[in-house]
Image (tube, rainbow, N blue to C red; front, side, top):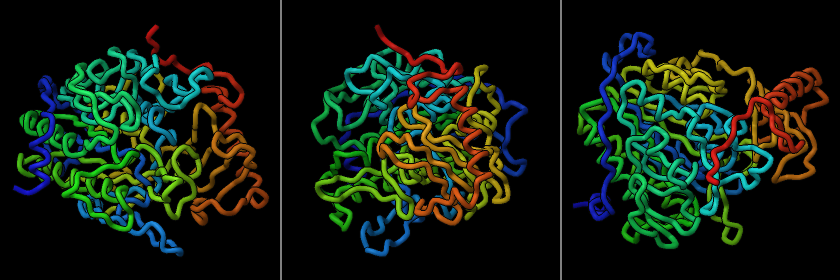
Amino acid sequence: MDFHRRELLTGLGALGVAAAGAGLWLARSRISPDGPKTKPNIVLIFSDDQGYADVGCYWQPRPDGAFPKIETPHLDRMAVDGVRFNNFYVAAPVCTPSRAALMTGCYPPRVGFGHKEFGPGVLTPTSKAGLHPDEVTLAEVMKSAGYATGCVGKWHLGHQPKFLPTNQGFDGFYGIPYSNNQRPLPLMRDEKVIRQLPETPVLTGMLTQAALSFIDTNAHQPFFLYLAHSAPHWPWNVVDPHRIKGLRGLYGDEVARIDWSTGEILASLERNGLTDNTLVLFCSDNGPWIDARTGLGGSAYPLRGLKAETFEGGVRTPMIAKFPGVIPPGLVSEQMGSVIDFLPTLAGLVGAELPDVPIDGKDIWPMFTTAVAQSPHEVLFYYARGRLEAVRDRRYKLMFGNMVRTPGYPEALYDLQEDPAETTDVRDAHPQVVTKLRAAAQRMRGELGDAMNGVDGPANRPVGVVQ
């Protein structure tokens, strides 16, 4: 028995998920006529703090030789077999609001994660807030189309019972309620604490086993699996037999484990005869973090910035998708998309109705199937702790002088096509672009507010709170 399998089998159990009704294959399905004739399964893998350059097919060598390449053969193979997005974004550069956006299809302030009284940016073990139960989540959209739904890994949208995954559209949950560096850290199944985890938990193997169990249990029916790794978020820890101890240290080992886990998921789909009827997606929740003491951590090179910043490196994420017979192999999209697009895109794919409240995401499915498809977004907005810090169109990005992590930074316009590293301010050369992007930002402030001004927008919905 190889080590990986042995580690899985010695985990703390698997996620048992109740089967949802089969439902109907609705006429509005977006599946290609040449693709599967039954509902596709969907696996969404979401890593934590993994940098843009920390997937092999995105990596570029730095002139100083720092941050050497981490080998990720399974993720690279996904890109060869499917589509790689080079301009894909999260909606916030830190965990909680980024995940709220993924689950709701909304910019974080619209669903309460940007309120002037919600200052920390991320939820903590003492927080009384969470994603409001009235919000329609991606899991609830999938359930409405007859899908079994499972959440494995890190949730971080509220640890109070009313906010947990099982009350937000998931049939079952196995994982942790917030980040792996927060204490106390319970390992949970559904709404029950199994045990408290140690200071440096090793979770990737156990979470992978739970995900594999979910696939095996639900192989006979359409399913949606959300596998949200806690890695490579610090603290880093890999069990001894799998420590590569390469040039990137334990961080690199954690990324390698995520790649291994992805390979296990793909192999499970193959064993169950599901490969050709499953859409697999992979991305990260925000940019990388670096340990100031050791210099070890993630890389977004050639992008500028890190986690918590709205420079490109803090919010642009690797995004790869594979769906044999539907997504052409080797496709590369340069169009801008975002995690807010997952909900409307997947709803369109499976024939589900959208929520009857405003959302910000758009159906970007054509971008999955052809390189000539244009993004439906005229502009994308960059939020951090409720502040509208930047806005971009298909080429240019205007950053405002109100950034949380870089106070006093002057307003600047960057040509992301020619200057993705954001080194040169080109405002003077393009005054009309500046005017256009300022106007777009002002319209959004009128809708969702701007915490820089200490006010909410009239379109914001409340965050959930336990009194």
